[in-house]
Amino acid sequence: MSDGVVATAVRCRVCGAASTEFGRARVLERIDVQYFQCSRCRFVQTEQPYWLDEAYSTALIAADVGAVDRNLRLAGITQTLIQQFFDADRRFLDYGGGYGLFVRLMRDRGFDFRWSDRYAQNLLSIGFDAAPNDDGFELVTAFEVLEHLVDPIEEIEAMFARGRASLLCTTELLPASNPRPGDWWYYVPSGGQHIAIYSPESLRHIAARLGCRVVSAHGWLHLFTRRAISERAFRLVSRRLVSATLNRLRRRPSLVPEDFARLTGGTLG
Image (cartoon, rainbow, N blue to C red; front, side, top):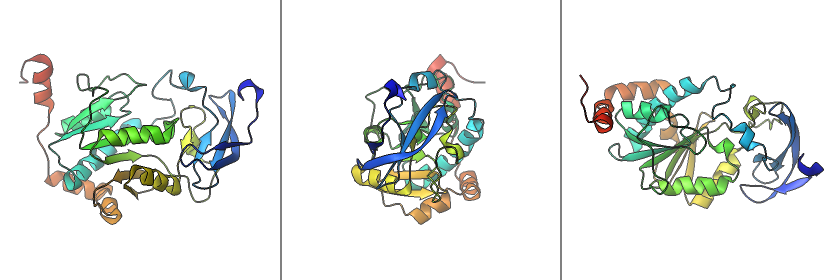
């Protein structure tokens, strides 16, 4: 613990209610950290995460062995959701976009995605960064981002404001069995980056703050939106087989030739 102080209760970073000690874990394999759970919305948070500079010395932790497969899977699901519920001809923003793989995949699929991430270097979608004050995006995506947020309400409000009132995100929700640190894989204390674990109740509180609804699927895919999108439809079209079938029927021209021309002034082929 920092400065030798042992706290017994803190305020929930989502709803402001009292949070009491929920467990402890060894973060980055050497720092003993307290976790707290909210008495009202079941949100789990660490103590103030003073170790983040060290945790983000690399944007991608060694334990994230599923990063490529996740991006490939989410590209397909996102394509389906955009074509089903949004205007596919508008611009999109990937917030917390890592090394730029998802943005490149979506541009390859014909969608004008832009990249933003304050912890990572854009390696795979160079030239398609979003300016800090750029907004008005049709949809903002934030995949495996929410569990990293020190101030969830402030940052989620900022993401939501950059889009046209829709934010598509992924984060694993705390199971009903209420596992403590050490009893569930998603805490990943060895990486030191997962400092916020959400419950269905905490997502609903965030949606109320945003003045919108949240619909969820599969326990990890969530859409905050003011659009009239039913949870049943959201769950159906985000199923992998349904998504793949719909995407085969509605392919868009890739932006690869256009992107090459923009970046080089030349043409492919």
